[in-house]
Each structure stands twice: as C-alpha cells, then as structure tokens.
Length: 299
Image (cartoon, rainbow, N blue to C red; front, side):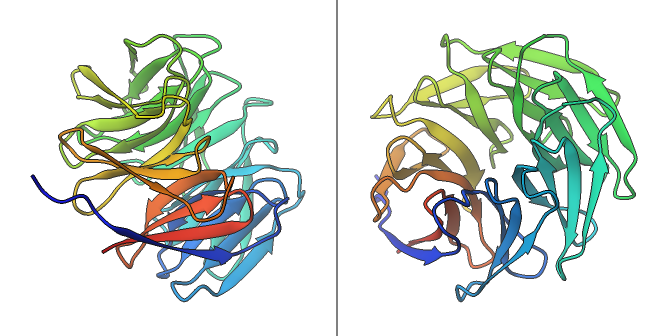
C-alpha cells in the first residue's frame, strides 16, 4: 500500500478577519487570485507571499467564486451585486449586469466553448457569458434548487451541484439539462471538480461525504471520518487526487481515485477554510476566512 502523504502547511496573512477570503484560483500571471467576499475586494498573492488587492464598487457586491478566463483575465461572480465581473492582471475591472434580477450568481468556470458558465443560485438558472459580455440564461427543471459550484466535465458538459435539491446537474451547450438525485438525503452538495478518471467529484456539506459521479450518472459516496466536518470546496491535483476543505473541522482532506481519504489539520484554530486550488508550484492553496491563505506542500 502506498504511504500516506506528509504535508507541510504555511499560512500568509492577506487581510483582516472581517474581509472573508473565500475562493481562490491560479492566475495566468503565475500568482494566486482570491475573493474577499465581505469587503468586496479581489486579492492577488505571489508564490513568495506578496499580496496586493483591488477594491470593487460597491464594496457590498459579495465577490464569490473566481476562475481564470480564456482571455488572460480573471472572472468572478458578484453574489449580492448580481453581476459577472472581469479583472485583468493589471487590476482593470469590468462588470456585466445579468438579465434576471436578484439572480445571485455563485459558481463560475470556463466552458469548452471558451465562454464562462455560471450558476444563478437565487434564480434556478445556468448562465453563459462570452468574453465580450453577451449573456445567455438557461432555466433549470427544478425550483428552489440553489445551483452552486460548476465545472466542465470530460464529456464537454457543464456539471453543477444543486445544494437545496440534493442533486447533481449537467448541461450541454444547447441548454439541455440532466438531473441526477443523490442517494443520501440532505447531502447538500456544494463544490465540484473534474477528476482525472473522467468522472466528476463533489462534496456533500450536509452529509459529510465526498461523492463521485460518472458521465452516465452512476454515483458513489465516500463518508468522511468526521461526518460533521462540513466539506465545502474541492479541487483536483496533477496526480489525479482531489483535495477538499473541511470548513467545520479546520482541516484539509485528500481523496485518491480509489477512495482513500487522508486529512490534515490546519495550524490556526477555527480558520474556516473555503476555496481550494492547485497553484503553479504544484502545491494546494486554500483561502481561510480568518484572513489568511494557506499553502499545502506534499513532502
């Protein structure tokens, strides 16, 4: 049996505790970019730990999930501002209002068509925006589903979690939606990522589980040792493992393609880990709501 990984964890202070670092992604400039949901700022941290940030207007817009776009810029959702926004690596910001009022955009990712696809949590819709700002919206066949995170699958469909409907959805470029209910009641899925095995991997914040769903809808679930750990976000590394944040337990977990789970305590108590991504250095980087960014290096 392969040995379990040893992980070194380093934390970088990026804001005060009230700013709420939330989501994080690797940028096209070799740095990590992250949202500060409560202060309405977009932050940038280099691999050496140098931090800069950019203020949004209004500050109450609630920047949530952020992703690298197809145009060498970063794109993010404004959950409370009901906009999709773009920031260049030099800090120029453009915002695009959505056609549906109070849509509550949350998850966002680049699709296979080089447009940005996003969830509208309050409106039960999936949206698509081109790099020049043209928006199309697709209604879901469920109401009150609260679509959350979204990621592109190996089948070129966009896969997304439906937190309140306890289901995983997939949408094609033509807007055709397929819904797959989860076996465990009240699983409340949030984060989702494409695995190296051609399946999608997701976390169930309500049930304390990691799930895997194949393109044809077969679901496997892997209970965590601490079912109350509140797993929140998940990201795949270059070796095909999935790393996830345990928001309620102050830990980072890793699950291998065959379902083996390892967990690592964060050094600062009650740090509330949220978003996670692999950085250009191969390490996993996670945003902690206490105002820090943590880097996890496997040794």
